Length: 330
Image 1 (spheres, one colour):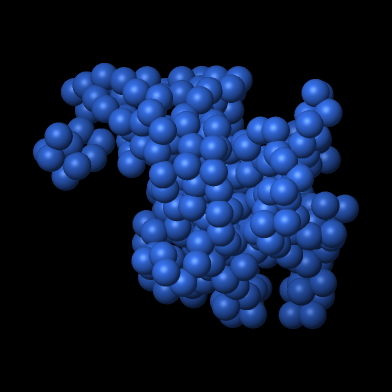
Image 2 (image 1 turned 180 degrees about the vertical axis):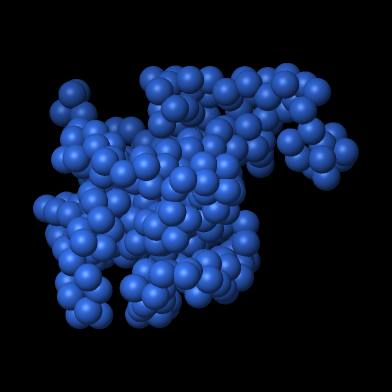
């Protein structure tokens, strides 16, 4: 849980609050009784919640709650499998009498989408290779509307409004810097690889204009963004008249960026730029998860176990002013 529930976490007291529903399902437990399983969120993060032993009389009202709805809950904080969980006592859908601001429920990247898009497009415009420039600007232009709000994942890293742009921007910043250090790599190829490597997440993930994902599309589940991305790059390169060797190299960048077959890449990187792309991707994902873990920790405290970081607890040293403005208020 995030900052606004720190006191409840420590004391295990009941609380009442509003959340956005990320997912909701009525399930049957091992005791053959129905229970409500929800993932709830506000702009500070996401948490799983369960309402046990549902009565038949509760089902009609619960069936009217959909992903993206705001609900008011009364709950207790508990823990399951080393993760915070909410034990819901009461839940209802919000109504017009509730004084709510949607911005309180939408987790967003920390920068304005227009500014992030402008930075990424500027990197594309600065490419010296005309074919790479033509490809990246084409893909950015035709996808601009959805890039403004799309998350980079249905869950986990950068699953937020504008998350895909935020992921690409930080990868570009790191990639450009590392291309200066490892001066034998092609900066143009690294920049192009970053811009195109996750572009088909726009069609792999189902998401609304609030950046809230409801899961994966049929195509995304059957193919995945890597396979979709290779197909897209092949088609667009042919459409734009980009030479075959360049097209194949770019397809390899997309194909290999997850590194392992278990994670969707049937080939490991066979170019230094592809190797660098993989590590830029994994570094940004892990640093995102690290920042999430420490973002509301008191100095000298450990986080809960972070599943996406192999179940590690993350420590915030007491002498590290990660958030100077907030720390000065403590």
